[in-house]
Amino acid sequence: MRMRPSYYPFVEPGFDIEMKYPDGKWLEIMGAGMVHPNVFKAAGYVPDEWQGFAFGIGIDRIAMMKYKINDIRLLYSNDLKFLNQF
Image 1 (spheres, rainbow, N blue to C red):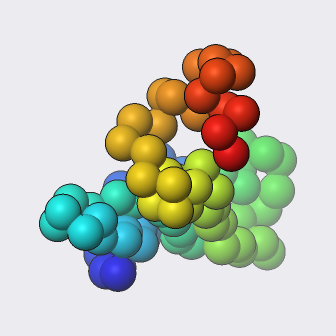
Image 2 (cartoon, rainbow, N blue to C red):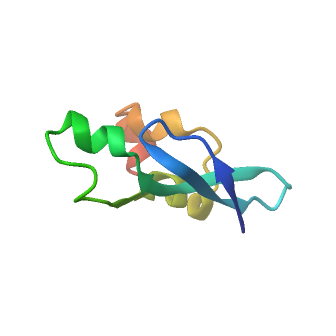
Image 3 (cartoon, helix red, strand yellow):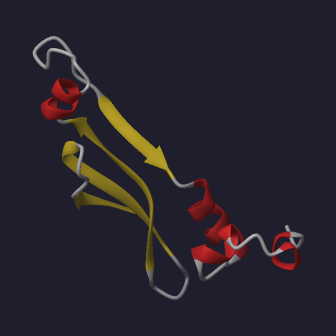
């Protein structure tokens, strides 16, 4: 696993966590960061009174690692022959 800085449009600073496949490729599984004050302004909140931490984990990406799926689009193709394997 590795954690490194990354760009996400609504957080500043942002980072992501990646896991390594056995073949040496990296797959991003989670992103996070502090919510940017402009997001609070756009939502009608006073940025000086509010702060937040946003994060998200891709459960689909963990399934890719576990079941050795090489293309995330297969999970969203609604192909029952493929999905019934799991």
